[in-house]
Length: 415
Image (cartoon, rainbow, N blue to C red):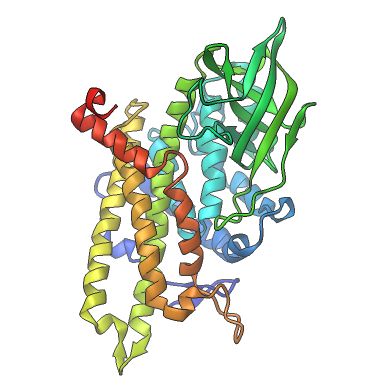
């Protein structure tokens, strides 16, 4: 395939996945979804990715046009059953994870937007009443509404316990009054609603709160190291009235719903790690073949031959792990462990380690956001910034190792 540049000037390179990865374990339905999303991403995400990844966070910078195109293409319907307006796929979790990988290949910001919109907010809404699905899930699928999902607080993230959390839903005669604050809430600056985990007495409850309700205030977008297109902000709740009909599931089921949702999200983040690693591989291979030092291509040095052989094998493992976790979800396992934890830790750790190698491969060019002399830029710099958050959110990688260790030794030993 001849290399070419997209509309942003970024080089489009050969996809080695097509020749190195032989997908023998996923159904034909999933292979078709991969090709569909890849075509969409190549046509629509790739040309916009550089601007998305390099524009400082602001409401005006949110990629609304691209979001609308994803909705029109039916991408938001992939995770859902036909009865709620979705595609009705046999393997929806696996299809969703593949979608996230293909989006992350060009932009981890875009993958994160879709992950939260569909996997977190949308998946949580599946536990809601028919009324909640009609009022929030249906317009989420069509892109008429943007969803967000909130568990993290200034002093509560990994620890989602009644003792650690401070956002409280106080029961009244006709609903709840919510007070508190949530932090790092993806999509919140542009979202229409948030699925919110609250303390409800000695238990936890999930509520849907519309972000234009009296007493709700969304802060300015955070300024982050990477994933600039993924807008996050604090949400403040000051005596916000929420009717009983906006309870997701049953009162007291909030933590269970949140943990199931975050496990699904973990598989999505694992897929994004595989997508970023594949992009790093493809761009690095091209650079190694074409950049010459001491009279020969860098690829002729055995160090990089062996390094790329290792990375090719690791990408194979990362992709197989997330696909296996997703397929187990589609079999009905809400908590597909240890595969989900393994996939999240392995895939995101790989992206982080490989990003460091990739910048080294590109040398000074890899350190540039843009070269002043000619305006050129290289994807590895963006991924170097974007990949770190994947090791932190939706369950820090240290927690994933703890989950795996519990499967080995038991909770009575690991705690």
